[in-house]
Amino acid sequence: MELQSLKNIAKQLMAGNKGLLAMDESTSTCNKRFQALDIPQTEEYRRKYRELIVTTPRLEEAISGAILFDETIRQSTADGKLFIETLKEKGIVPGIKVDEGAIDMDGFPDEKITEGLDNLHKRLTEYYALGARFAKWRAVITIGNNTPTSGNIKANAFLLARYAIICQEIGMVPIVEPEVLMDGNHSLKTCAEVTTEVLHTVFNQLYQQRVSFEGMILKPNMIVPGLQSPQQDNADAVADATINCFLRCVPASVPGIAFLSGGQSPELASERLNAMHVRFKDKMPWALTFSYSRAVQQPCLEKWGGRDENIAEAQRLLYERAHINTLAREGKYTA
Ligand code: 13P
Image 1 (cartoon, protein in one colour):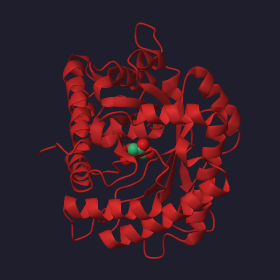
Image 2: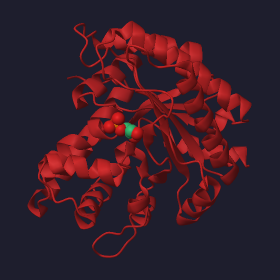
Image 3: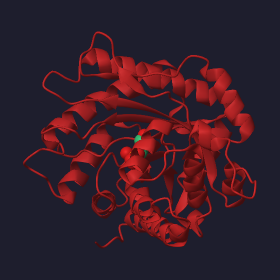
């Protein structure tokens, strides 16, 4: 493993005021989003949509790295150029989602475990040869009456750590994504307690599996109240809870933290990231940015609606949302 080259990739991903674009929806997730908007759920429409994204003018001003999916990394624009080449020409680092999704965890009702470790070394070797320089694995933690259990958190953390060391051995920066879901009526405080436990467990496992913290990126949830909670705390409270938790749990040697949006509205996802930068300017040891899918893509996808005549306007909306988040990363976003 070349630690310096991992550090260089991480640095490129966290550069300036840029963020990552998650465009790694699995076929079933992408189809679900298409279905809601009456867009045909075919490989060609998925390809057209991803072409729209990667050819968005000025995308590279706001986006440092794009996370692709197995289908997408092999696809090309209508004129035959691989998406991965289009991204590289723009200076956007190509990445790849390598987990195979979260399934029900046997023995642990209402909890999920992520699949995908089998043959991972071999799969990553191929992705590296295709040009991917970082990877992503998402673990899902559910807050409920009797969850999460420590058995579930530990199992997910162990898998994240095994995935991460395999990435580093191959020369790819692992994005380690333990997502505490927003679903439920729990409070901000409960989300903070669960996220703290999850992050401590994940970093302990990363250490045990010999992952270099300097050569990884953390992709966490923000600490937010449950979507159905009667008390919806403001952005300042979310910022304080989130950064205070990370200051306790995330080693200073980790170069970057890039949030998932997790179903927050695009506006809230920007407002909360902005509040963190306003309130903790110069107090954070890591770079702090976004790695949103829905909170950057949703307005664009809705505008496109599967129609060629809407592509230019949809691309404008994609760039606008990405750009707004670069302002949030500088603490300069205004609603
Ligand atoms: P969201 O921003 O829509 O949560 O997606 C981020 C992601 O990559 C989920 O794995």
